[in-house]
Amino acid sequence: MSEKHVDRELDRAGRRLGRPGRWLILLAVLLAAPGVLLLVVGNGSARGVGIALVSLAGAPALAGLGLLLANAVAWWSARDKPFA
Image (cartoon, rainbow, N blue to C red; front, top):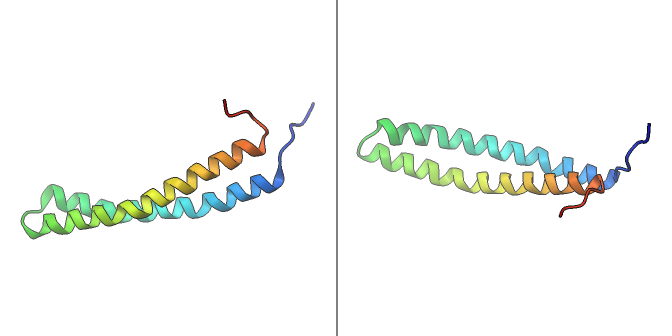
């Protein structure tokens, strides 16, 4: 069996980026879930709080998605696979 070449440094960098990315996505979900609930069942100022929570969840969600995307690119590059 032939083993494929894996660049360990890129693989390690990808794992370092993926872990905080998952935590940021979890934080975003934990912030957005009550916000969506307040938007659906709330009225008046409760909807404003729901909008605020969903808006606040956007920043960690985008950062987490960016880190997960960088993780995927580093993982793909570590295996010497062509991108296109």
